[in-house]
Structure formats: C-alpha cells, structure tokens
Image 1 (cartoon, rainbow, N blue to C red):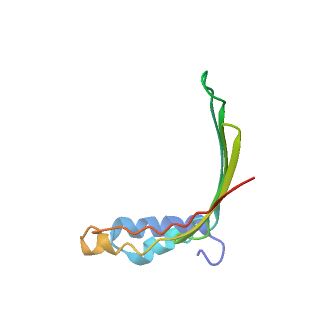
Image 2 (tube, rainbow, N blue to C red; image 1 turned 45 degrees about the vertical axis):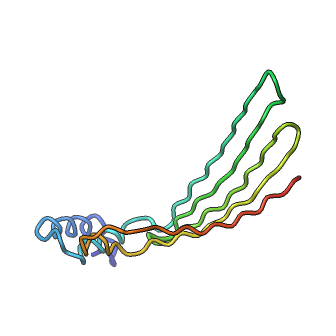
Length: 124
C-alpha cells in the first residue's frame, strides 16, 4: 500500500499489526518508513555579561544540526567570544552515528561511553 501511494491505509495497517504483535519488526520498520528522512535545526545564541569592574563580555553562536537518517547526524557551528577587548572564535563540527539498540534487546546497560573531540581556536 505504501509503495502505491496509499500511505494512510498503510500506516493504519502497520499500527494494527503492532497491536496484534507488539514485537513485530516488520510493522516497526513499516511505520519508520513514513518518518521524514532529513531534519534540520538552526540554533542561534547570544550572551552578554555587563560588569561594573571590567569591560563587557559577549558570546555569539550559530549552530546547524542535521539528521540525515535515523542513524546519522552532523553538527556544524561557529562561536565567537569577546573578553576584555580581546576577540576569539572557533568552528565546531561533528558527525554522530547511532548504533542499533542492542542494549534493550539484550537487557543490558552500556558500561561506558567514549567521546573524541578536537578543537582549535584562533584570534580574529
């Protein structure tokens, strides 16, 4: 039904299949096929600190997060800082991959997490 354009009927059929068999992998995959593939989120940030004993501090940021599929995402951003008359900035980029949810099927919790980060800042 989904392939021939009858999406509402196909979604209803997949939901009914899940009611009858909550563990149905086919029904879950069928419902996921209706999800939008690409989602984008633009984040803008501004922070100002005004002091009576020093110059003002300002931070600005622009960040774009894109989910290309349920497993893959990218994040690209730029941050600028003004501290006591000195300006600095950095570019940030990352790629995220979600692994299959094996922990739930194995009834186990992850024992650790690893994060790899590389940053380089420069003055304007």
